[in-house]
Image (spheres, rainbow, N blue to C red):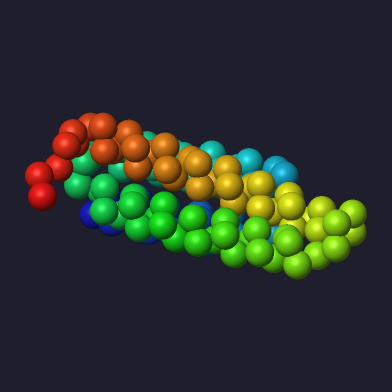
Length: 112
């Protein structure tokens, strides 16, 4: 049950972090909660597939956010807001990718 709750919490926090309207404090708090939930999963190598799917999804979100940012004229407030959101999504992606890498290192080479 603990694993299910931790995964559900990870999904919940990632959903919250997609919101471009979050304040810096809200992002910081939610990111801290996300890290705590990932740490709970970090003790069990069976979560690699779950982690890899989250990394793939976050990568798509970064690409989409970059495309949105690029659609705005440089120097406008919309572009600046989109740039901040993109940077945040890149940071979340890095966090997830690092977690996934730690799990891969724990597991070692997988047999094919």
